Figure (tube, rainbow, N blue to C red):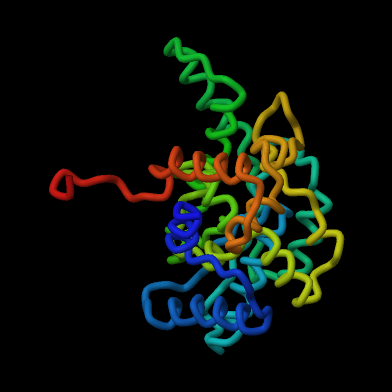
Length: 267
């Protein structure tokens, strides 16, 4: 219980949320960031077709509208690797979000080129490492677009992913602001339902879909833990001790992913 409370405190998760209030808080957070940073003109969000990026995209769109500044733009990036299995969900998400600009860039050639360069140097790349290459290539593209449009990259990681380290360091974990990092997967789904998101979208089984030899692999299979259990843990509920121990182990093991680089002067 002591470790559970520590994790909850660090991630600032809540046992209960009220959808309207939570949506307002997230929108105000994004809106205030835009208004308080005069050199920012755009919000960059990578849209995967999953719940997290759909929610973040919609929150960003609403925040921009609240500013009443027509110069602010929401730029949605579609960054498939070859042909994406869940392309239908991506299109559905974009229709729901209604971004100002949509940019489609297929990252496959870039990733394959990087893989070949590494292998030419004698470094064999596993499917797992190739998955990280994909994630980092997507983030690289997002920051290039952000530079082009004087924008910032908006993160889409939720608390359940952060608690277990289920994200790529300097890949999907890299961003400038993170509006939903305190929400677990259940809460993300509830906010989407409240915002009248299509049921097919908020009911979609989460998958990172990064490994070529395991296309569409569900997150829960990769983690070996049900999101229901992670969410219960982050809401302060008592869960099976073995599962709690595994969550705590993953949290400790992936601590480095949630921290900025350690500076010499801080050591």
